[in-house]
Image (cartoon, rainbow, N blue to C red; front, side, top):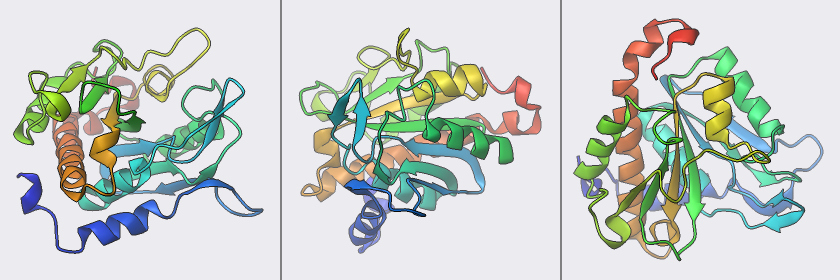
Length: 245
């Protein structure tokens, strides 16, 4: 199903309502949740850990616009779970070895185990891809990658594509982290034994002034989630220790 077949007339306004739950520059008030979580029925979790501003290595980093809105919209469309940063935080939910965000992910997975996680990030406009997939060199979701790539190809995105239709696979953003940084992908795979994929979305595909690009991006992310859920379905009937690898 291509993107122009799944969007209703008011999809954009609803997308913006979902995105506007995030206050990029505002810290959580007393009693207010810094992290948002909406459980679902599909055993896939969408994550948007950089939706608001955060601090990495002592530097205040910009939020990644529309990552929460897109993740929340796709979760509504597919029935997936969604976890996202709602307010500015003093650490980095993605790279810190310990973060409230990672603990929220652990708690959600413990309560309702998922079969797959899609960790959504925003890439700058200097990159020569539309989407970049990081699977730790295939470690974190090797068996699911063919189905995921096929689903993206149906939406026009592929490793052979040009410009914003190009998919970068485990080149620029591998999701591996480093000795001083633990990505959510690595945390999910190593600590939770949860198959997962980091997805970086080019800035132009998240541009609120370009609704056609946003539609294409939303549809591609939706297709990715549904393909991953279908491919990982058999893991849900197995024990947590035998999830797909």
